[in-house]
Image (tube, rainbow, N blue to C red; front, side, top):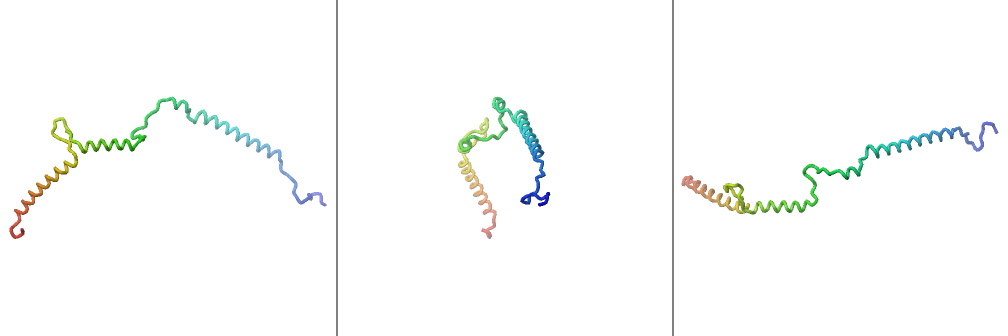
Length: 133
């Protein structure tokens, strides 16, 4: 066998294991140091102090706010509107204008409109010549 031939056809190990381990250890140390530094920086400077936040008085957000029970609020709102639409009341202090229920207002409008259309119909029929009647 030749001097440079190795048994089983393997090449010699020319890797500096010690150097590779040292570089790996240095990289691990850098990563570990970075993680520890970031932990303290984030904990002390960036993250809010929750205990202090909980102790300070709360500020209400601007309107409109979320409702805890919108169905109940909607029912109350509709009841108020229904009371306004179905009741009688004065709308001014001099009692010149009144609020009446919608159904009654429609009846009054229909009666007035029927009278005015009947009067207009009489005028139209009397204005037409005899030949067109």
